[in-house]
Amino acid sequence: MSSLSPADGAAYWLRWQVFVCGALIALPAAAAAALLPRLRRSVAPLRATDLWVPCWARLHPGWLLGYRAFALAAAVALLARLLLGHGLSVFYFYTQWTFLLVTIYFAFATAISAHGCWVYSKKSSKKADESHGFLNDDVENCDLSTSVSVERKKDEPNKLSSYYEQIVNEKRAGFWGRCMQITYQTSAGATMLTDLTFWGLLVPFFYRDKFGLALVTDGMHSLNAVFLLIDTVLNNMPFPWYRMAFFVFWSCAYVTFQWVLHACGHTRFWTFHHLELLYGTGLYLLILSLTIHQRGILREILIWSRYLGMAIAHIPCFFLYWLIVKVKHAYFPRMFPHAYARTV
Image (tube, rainbow, N blue to C red; front, side, top):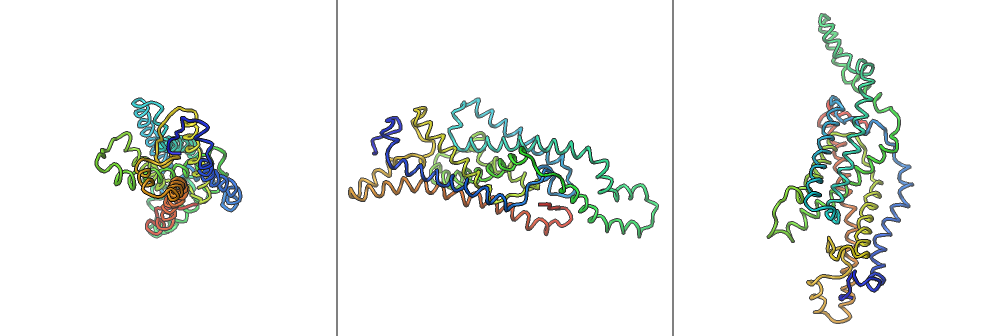
């Protein structure tokens, strides 16, 4: 088995061990596909305004649009620089897949925020007068008594709350809005997976002696998370747990892509050693030191455990970002009771 490679064709790919690893990919995807419709029905539908209205009461939607446009421009610039330097082969790596997905999310978000700001501007003359009328009254009726002015200030939170109640009672999000949220949650989980693997595993244990931070390559392992976290602080989108299914689909698609590349002979090296269906030199020497019976058992365990470990790692990575959003919704209203206007 150790003498085979993907270049050997059917002799390599038709081994029963490959089918076991394939099952470790297919079973999570099948389970996610089966559970997705049931879990989706238990969650409130996504509102269109959740996609572009900030979670901060006095923050104009234009600020969220401006940030998303900036993040999109920065992400496109980084991808363009990487493509010019290395070509399409950079997309052999999961990191670049993830960064591309983050870029697609900000493209969706920028377009939908722009449309939302246009809708907001159309209704501003009516709704802004109703919701922020107390601000105009303070200027135009400055000759009123102090008691009336104080009363208006007391009514300010109620009027602001009424304004956001009107905002959120809009129609449900359409197809593109749901695509935006799916992309958001998938890229969040994938970003946690790539960044935690890079900074928590690769840098300390593999790149420690020859590590040099490069803006375009290694910088992607930081900027993707920074872009998404800032957007999370500003946006008002829910983060339902069941959409982890799309994160699983995304990773399964990448592994399938890698297998197809090797099966077709387009590449002979595995971008990640844990995807390799054989064992490396170090593990090979370890196996040789064991008995024949022990070698076979350990060899299969090492191969399967890598794929099983990849599947299990998706749960804490997605849960970590879900927890960040949960903490935001739980503690921001307490920390900023007058500024934070949660509507999800």
